[in-house]
Length: 291
Ligand code: NAP
Image 1 (tube, rainbow, N blue to C red):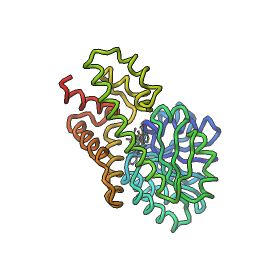
Image 2: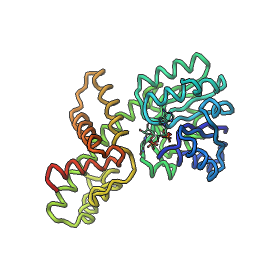
Image 3: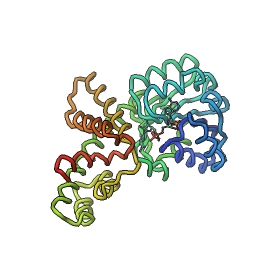
Image 4: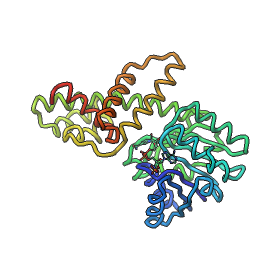
C-alpha cells in the first residue's frame, strides 16, 4: 500500500520502519526536515517537504505528532493532508489527542470525501520498535477493515472500540491507569530503597503476583537507578491526563488520582524534567521522603 506518514518522533520513526518491513511504500514528512532526510537515507523511505505532498500518492495518510493543535495543523493547515489527499482515501491519526478535536477533524475531512480513524496506541517506544503496539481504533468498520494491513504492521492487538473519537476516549482510560500504576510503583520502589532491600529481588518477588504491571516490569529499574531516559515524555503524559480530566469533567466523573498525578507532572515540568520518561514520577516520591 502507498502510505504517507507524518511525524518521525520517538514513536513515528520505528512505526515507519515496521511499515517498510511489511512491504508498504512510505512517504514521510517531519517538521524538522533534517530528521526526515537522515531517516529516508537510512530506510529507503521517500522524504517530502509538506504533509500535503506526502498525502498526494497515498491510499492511507497516518499522523503521529504531539497534541491536538499539531494534528489539526498537519491535517487541516495550509499545507496539510487535506489539500493533497485523494477523495476516498483514509487518514489515521495515531497521536493521543482530544476526542472532541478528533471528531471535528473527521467532519472537515468528510466534506472532501476523506475518511478518518482515530487509532491511538499504547506499548511505549519498545512496542513501537517491536511492532507490538496495542492500537485502540475509533471509526467506521469498513475503514478499520481497509486499515488492517497497515495497523497489523505496527501493532499486535488491534481493537475496534467504537465510532470516531472512541479510540481517544479508550486511550484516556489507558493513561488514567498508567498514572495510578506508575505512581504506585514509584512509592513501592522508594520505600524498598529506604528499607535497604535488594530491589531486583523485590521486583522479581512482586512482579509475577497481583502487583505485576507493565510499569513495574519495564520502568522500575529507572526508578531504582534514579535515571529516566525516554520512554515517554512527562509533558506528553501530562497532556494526556489533561485530555482525560477534560473528558471526565464533561461527563461529571471525578478522577482524584489522575488529577493528583497531573499536578505532580506539572511540578516535574516546572523543575525542568518535562522531557524525561514518566518514570521520573519517582523523583517526586523520593523528594517527599528526602531520598
Ligand atoms: P515526540 O518524540 O515528541 O515526537 C513528536 C513528533 O511530532 C515529531 O516528529 C515532531 O516534529 C512532530 N510534531 C509535533 N508538533 C508538530 C507540528 N505542529 N507540526 C508538525 N510536526 C509536529 O513524540 P512521540 O513520543 O513520538 O509521541 C507522538 C504521539 O504518540 C503523541 O501524541 C504521544 O502522546 C503518543 N504516544 C507516545 C508514546 C511514547 O511512549 N512515546 C506512547 C503512546 C503514545 P519535530 O521532529 O520537528 O519536533
